[in-house]
Length: 226
Image (cartoon, rainbow, N blue to C red):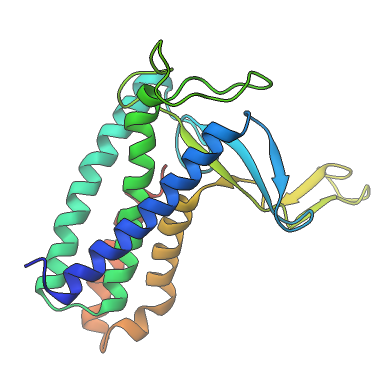
């Protein structure tokens, strides 16, 4: 079964995204202090090292217990997504759909790896606290499924202040795009938006498209959390 072209396509996308995601995260974790940054595109793009203990784009959920429940929930969601992709292949769905769901799957797995293993593998990162070590002698900074997700892609394309005359926000700082994210987050977002934007090209008629779009929306709600 794994020799079928569509299976190979799914596996290739997942493996490539995971390798790129983990290589960048490990490099940042072991070569940058927490909060350190350097410019990629002038003032428009940076590598900025932060860690996310909760959901996507720095959101948090329920402390340590919430973190554990969220990690377990994600693992279950990934298992369901793998099953769903297998069904898509069996029913002969277009390659574009498989690419989108493969990106979502790869991103979800990439962030689960951080949550599951980074607390065991790395020492703590802190401001001006030196570089984190991989496989430190005293053990890692956390327990299984309690690791922090490494984020580093930061693109504040607009960084200005609201006009003083504007009600409520006058004089306040305005940034777009403010969140710091990673390759796994990008893969999930790209997969979801591609499904929504190009679904008319993926499917030949509306009857085929409707159930897939509804199911993709449900998948988005589950997996765009890391």
